[in-house]
Image 1 (cartoon, rainbow, N blue to C red):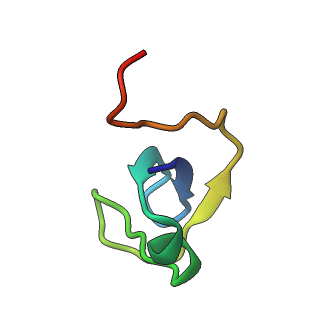
Image 2: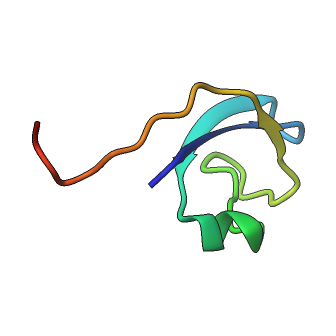
Length: 54
């Protein structure tokens, strides 16, 4: 699942969340500190976490 970087303008906290694409498209993120759903997405490097070992 992808990890997304967010910034909460309400409490000025930057954090990351692991969300499925469906959760992300529904706006399924909230600030872990204040609970606000008004978040700004930050740019971050993309990496995939899989269960296969190479």
